[in-house]
Image 1: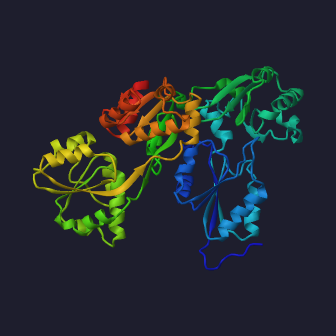
Image 2 (image 1 turned 45 degrees about the vertical axis):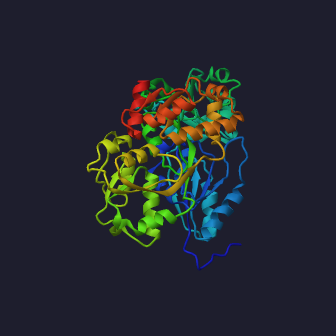
Length: 511
């Protein structure tokens, strides 16, 4: 059925476990594979941040695999894996939990073997192990639980309940639909009706809920509730439940909506998640090349005539040096030009090109670049690659006031996405957001514009009412100014105008 093109490099399929879905508990191996994937074939996952890890040109195919929702047939999934592998692609098959625990992985492996496809297994942290731990339930104890068993509750009538009822601790996946049957099987086979039971729903996420009871009471407790996805734990170890470290973190139970550039990394998310926050990333900026390279190309050809190069964003750094390379030049053309950057992130991005800035203004803001510039600006020839429209006008005017000869050239453009992110919009509508962060004036403007489009109104009152009781967090004075203009308030502003500084201020605000 399949015939491999011999002219293509060998493809490979990585069968990867995503763990419980929260990006915090993704393995390092899985992280690296996702960042290099050419094709991603994934199950319905809890955390959309996992999908942001793949390259922009990666083909992403959602095959479902979530209880009660449409899913692709297994034969179709097998076909996709084989087809893209034989095209020479690096394919990541991202499966929930650990792919070898109730994940139908054998069918996919058999199909890959039959087609002579190269593959590799990459384990994930199974929810059977992670969910109890995150909620403070130990699965073993030297006195009351010397063993535990993991089972699926999908077809309980096929299991040996006489044997299972004798095991100290049971961990049941996919069992909430058959909860009543499972309880009856256990009680009828000698398990005490007073045996503790815990149902852990949406483990490791902001939506996590834990229902505690006994075999005798749990059915009535959860009657009428939608529980999937959930893990069921049964056993006396539940009485040993301790306070998990996750729940004591300063931002535990808080959801942060991060407005960011579409292409931006998840660095800020990781900083907040380390403090216990649940994060939703909302693209509020799209970055793309300038309408013309002519001015930047001319500046690059005459680089030797400049005294300083000023870079105020990671985007400016990346587009400038990518264009340098595309014109067949390397770092040597910079010669004796000195480089000034605004912000830690810009400096860090510059280091990727093995360059260290000659000057970074205090507090990492452009407004202080003039006051602390290490040389007299009069008659200095300065190259400033910048966004094509909007941004840094104040800096340019101040440099001109100091009689600097500043040459502005467009290095990239930024625009507003056409539609608001679905996950972000649902969270805002359902009042599930506690904090919204803004790292630039443009993200504030575009956020406001996206809300206007989503609500289909230009009535400011309707837009602002959507933000009631949400903390608005700004990275610095210019961003705060735009917040006041459009959103009429700012609840906190970073004292150090960096992502780390903003994280620190958010933690302080909620401590």
